[in-house]
Image 1 (spheres, helix red, strand yellow):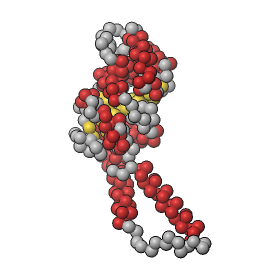
Image 2 (tube, one colour):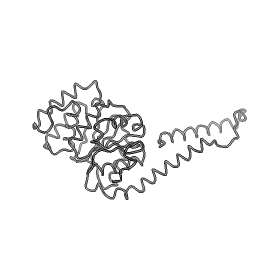
Image 3 (cartoon, one colour):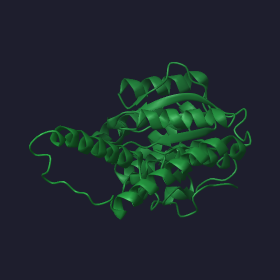
Image 4 (tube, one colour):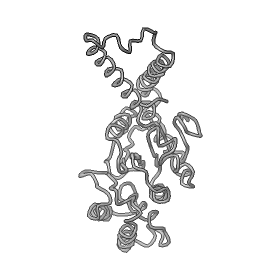
Length: 288
């Protein structure tokens, strides 16, 4: 599917060409480079693809409430944004969550240090310290660095295995270490949406974080843009074992992808895993 960025670049190019033509048309260079041939087949094909893409997005937006059938009614979703996540994508998905009858419990912003290999020592030390303040059975002692920090984040935003005070303490500690910025007001929920950013993260780090989140929540859905599903973070994630525990959706930079993401969230209430979107191996849309 052609991205909106491609549409914008194409439109800008057309407007620039028209403006240059106006300037040259009235001067001595008006006859230079004149091309009286009709619009090329290639340009027509691009225009048709653009119209088809808009139609798909318009259809998805209009059909979404019927497809959702209120399946997120009385369900709240916690959103975790990775570094570089597009705010418009996050807002678009949040609006679709509400259209499905759900709500957003809070948005957590993962900071670059959380997914930076050079900050592993910080992540490991903080995770070890925080574990000492929890009951022994909350997080396994042998959990790896990023699995452990993912579980800590998970119990803080959605788990019922820790008290409200313990959850608040974890959030404050993560914020103090500049690893995760928490919302001022948040309630704990069973569903977590992770929105990937434009900056590639280490596959092992991202996989560890998501493994931890999946271990402490009912369902996790990971959304990325069209490019991430082709060769970016989402593509790498789908090759990891954690792909059996979290659902992945690409093309979240389009309305079709955002609707698909919310359908995956509804599905994750009962079924975990699954690869959906333009390059998804389990089909374009999870309708079941």
